[in-house]
Structure formats: structure tokens, C-alpha cells
Length: 414
Image 1 (cartoon, rainbow, N blue to C red):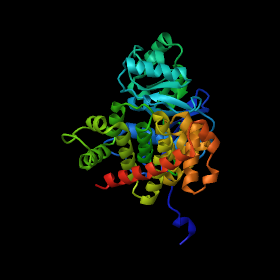
Image 2 (spheres, rainbow, N blue to C red):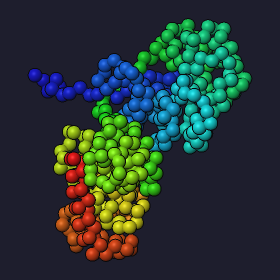
Image 3 (cartoon, rainbow, N blue to C red):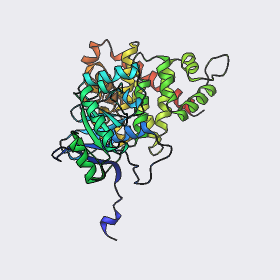
Image 4 (cartoon, rainbow, N blue to C red):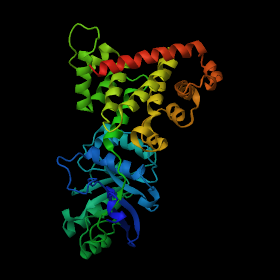
């Protein structure tokens, strides 16, 4: 058997379809979700997951320059994914708003914020008969679904858009014949897309495990400084399996209460945000069944040690916990730490601690790493002193962390 036949086939990352200008030069690409195994679309279709998969595979995997050829990339966004902070270069990404997203004040404000950050906005699959759609004043591009209109109707809508919203560029999509293209060019469309010009091309590579990225985002949310009870509850509720397991764990653990806990909000309020977030973090990482249990124990031990080193400084403690935990990301995800950190909503002080071991959080992380290795003399004593931590504090924190880890593992196994 040849060596090539033994190499596993690369996963499908997405499909890429060119977008042309009036001179039929490629000026952009639209990235389209495709199942990683190359099979049929999953049913029911999860638009949020599809958008997240495309974004992660395009912007955090491989060579973006190869994917984009230096041109902007159109990506479909759902209402939920639009509400997230987009950690991508506005010059590279065109935010394509799905036509079925309801328009309201919240959506209006979100689109205004995206425009202020420099993102180009496109309205997808437009089929209205007039130019009164509330999205139009906020977008830069409207994609007209050409097959929906007769020739006269198409010319009328193009004219109405030109008159009412002269700032908008008009993209004619779903062009399947030369006559379709000729008509759209004749009425003055700016951009063109469809099977007649080019079919979507499947792009292959090493796909991102989106469920694991979701786990990271959940942990990042749980461990934000000053996170509210409601935020923690909402984050856990996004993963029903995690929510059920957490409630079961809390109801079997030896916590003082008068009655069984029946809701996540009740659990967080009664047990306390710090303990709940620690337990949820432990359970979330436990879902990664292909990783050895010892790896989870090491990550959790370092995280607890970092938090205990911070002492009574609550905000610093929670930042230190997430830094300690995420310092093991490369081992969990088999990807570069810088790449993973870039895809998460982390506080800059945590990012700097993880990548460069600088700042108070970085000092605590460096201290934990030195303690684990038995390098007492290499601990950054001067920076520790600047944040009010003495040698006796380090020893006490280490003892408390060992006890905390033992308690968490006992509860998780009950």
C-alpha cells in the first residue's frame, strides 16, 4: 500500500465561492459552511454552530492569506453570533446578515458598533419589492436574490435601491446563466456571484473542534472577574449536559442547605460563585474524554495554586485561576497557545500572563510553575513582594491549593 493511501483525508473546512466585479475580476470570496466529513448537511441545521465553525476554520487555522488571496471574506452571521465580540480584522471580514434575523433596537445598536469598528456589513438574500427594509441604512452591500425577481422587477428594485440608498453596493447572487449575468450588468449591479461564474470550491485542512472551543468560551465566561450569578447560570445553561451534571453534583456534595437545589441560579446563589465556577470548570474539562485524567489534575492544581497565591484580592484571584488553567491549553487542544488565546474573550492581563508571564497575573503564574518544578530560588520574589506576597504566603497558598483540589475531585466523583 502506498504511503499516500495511508494518510488520513483532511477534513472539510468550508466551501469558498468567488465574488466578481463588473470587469469579472475576483474581488472577494464567500465562505460557506460544509460538514467536516464531506457528508450531507446536518438536520436540524444549527446556524450558530455553522458560523462559528467557518470563522474558526478560516481565521485560526492554516494560512489566511491562502484562503483569502488578499481579498475580503464574506461570512453569514446569525443573530446570536452577531451579538458576540468579533476578534477578527475588519479589513478581512465582511459580516453578512442573514435575511431572517428580526430587526430591533438591540440589533440596530450592534450593527452600529460593528460599523464603528470598521466592519463592512452586507444584507443577504434580499427579496423585498421595495427599498424600505430597516437594515438598508446600516449596510454597505445588499445581495439581491436574482431568481426571485422577473427582469422588470429586478430592474425596478435596483433602481429603487439606487435612489433611496445611493451608498449601497448591489451584489446580484445566484446567477446561473449568461443571460442572468448580462441582465444584472445591464441594470448596473456592482458585484456578481453564482454558479455560472464559479461554483463553491471545497477547502480542506485540519478542522477546529468547535465543541471544545465552546468549552473554552464557557470556562472564560465562568471565570471573568466580577461575573454575576445570572451570567454564570446563562453560561452553564448553554450546555444542557453540563447543567444537568452540575446540579447532580451539587445535590450529592456535602454542602449545607435546607432543600435540594433545582435550578442553576439557585445553585450559584446558595453555593457561591467561586465554588460553582470551579466545579463547572472541572466538569467542562472532564468532557474531553480523549485526554488523560492526569492532565486535568495538573491543570486544575496549577489553577487553584494561582488563585490561592492571590490571597484576598478577589479580582486578581479569578484572573490568576483562569491563567493557571489555560496555561495547559496547548496540551488539551494540540494547538499553539497564542492561536487559542486569540479566539477567546480573555482580559488583556490574562492574555499577557499566558503569553509573556508579565504583570501581577503573570507573576502568580510564573510562581506556580516554579513551585511545581521545585525551583524555590527561581520564584520571582521581587515582583511578588511588589504585590504584597511574602515567602510564608506562598507556602500557605500551596497548602490551601492542595486541599482545594482534593475537595473538588472528591465532589466531582460523588
